[in-house]
Amino acid sequence: MIALLGIAVVIVGFLIRINPLLVIAAAVLATGWAAGFDLVHTLALFGHAFNENRYVSIVFLVLPVIGLLEREGLQERARILIGRLRGATVGRLLLVYMLFRQAMSAIGLASAVGGHAQVVRPLLAPMAEAAAEKDGPLSEEKRNTIRAFAASVDNVGAFFGEDIFLAMSSVLLIKGFLEQNHIIVQPLSISLWSIPTAIAAALIHGTRLWLLDRKLKRQSLNPPSPPSGGEGRVRGR
Amino acid sequence: MITLDHIYILMGALFVAVAALSLRDRANKKRFGNAIFWSLFAASFLFGSHLSDFANGVLVLALVIVGGFNFIGRTAPPTTSPEQRRERAQRYGNGLFYIALIIPLVALIGTLFLKGSGLVDPKQVTLISLGIGVVVALVVGYIWMKPPALAPLEEARRLADTIGWAALLPQLLASLGAVFAAGGVGKEVGIIATQYLPLGTPFAAVATYCIGMALFTIIMGNAFAAFPVMTAAIGLPLVVGQFHGDVTVMAALGMLAGYCGTLVTPMAANFNIVPAALLEIPDYAVIRAQIPTAIPLLIVNIVLMYALAF
Image (tube, rainbow over all chains, first blue to last red; front, side):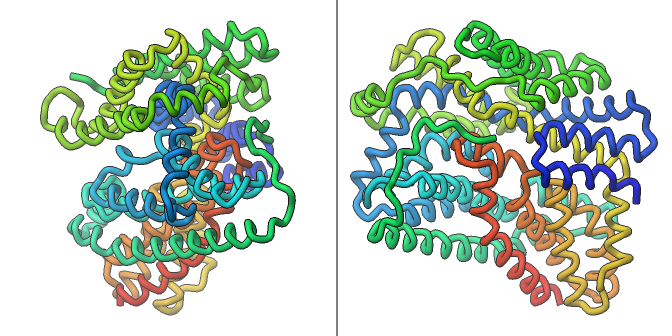
């Protein structure tokens, strides 16, 4: 049971909202202590894993390009483009992107096409906001909801598309794990059995996007509170 | 041959520049904190492969202290005004999109065509192609828009400081997963799951396996970490062994049940917390938008596994 001390630290830490970096470091030290490792060994394990996982952060390499394009008006351009498109609503726009992302992931391009830094912040979120602004200015709450949904379609599309690709790391992990247990399965059959859930994910999240459109429409007909600008706000940590 | 190490050097160089620009920014009272934080981050990319595991551990701890105790400040690097941006959006037109599309396009072409070329490490072809795409897009941007020489780096600093300490989370959580594994956390969870949970019927076994995958993914932040544990504890011995469910269905849908957990956990920081920081919305806003999708999807997944596996 004591091996689970690290998990307890994580749960309590997140619940009482201590800075996550500190929570993680504390969980690492607690897990090492519970497992009977000395401090040097624990730190070495942590450092080794951190170094091995550097590839996770490579996505930040796009920041100078995205920043430069924002400086030169990329988000504004995205708004102009959507403003001209008749019939473009938040829900329809996000649905099209989600299906596109799912399709790209299903052919093995999850990490090549899409992503929060590359697409959602500079393009998708401003487009979704512009689509909503056709019905009048946005309250901060609405703006936040629209941005959150823009991030969500990137996630749902990628998660429930990528397992259809048979060379995806998760498919290979499944195959490798079963092989260790002396069961041979074909990657293709794992891929095929991932399709029903992929369809369900598109239907469920698609329905929520449709409901989001209806909610935004209703609110713009009867505005509940005076709208306020959402730009340049300081984010609460 | 281009390997991931070259991309790491590029990352290191970028964040050395971010750190240097931070140091210059006298408007930021915490500028030394920002400079130290991004220098340490850069050091990990530049020297991480040459440092001992323990030295890397000390480096991470230093990053955690600077980031976690709020020694880094929010900044406002020089950029264009909203009016300037609107004017430039008119001037550059859709060319802005084409530059933005260079990155995924190069990543795409690289992934498809560079694999067997011998020019890049075939195991890391997408990440390396992404790095090449960034360089190409930057060069095109410089030539076409002729920004001040430091502008892309100042803009990178603006975005990096928007993300702040959350930039460290994805890598840190992946490392925590490794320490959990070394400490035997997974095995312990598997033992508890089998001892205390109802598993008497095929449906109960399927439901427990799927919900267990989701819950353990919520804790670990990663379905890949949960899969071997829960499948060895419940999936293989019960769903397949005792009740004769189809092993491929169990495994494929088990992993997807884990993804339902990924949608709702702050531990999956790269999907849920970093985007919130990037979009400047409350930390948990993305998770809140995803919970009402994750729960019905998990239920559908359980029903699908039960219907298809038996």
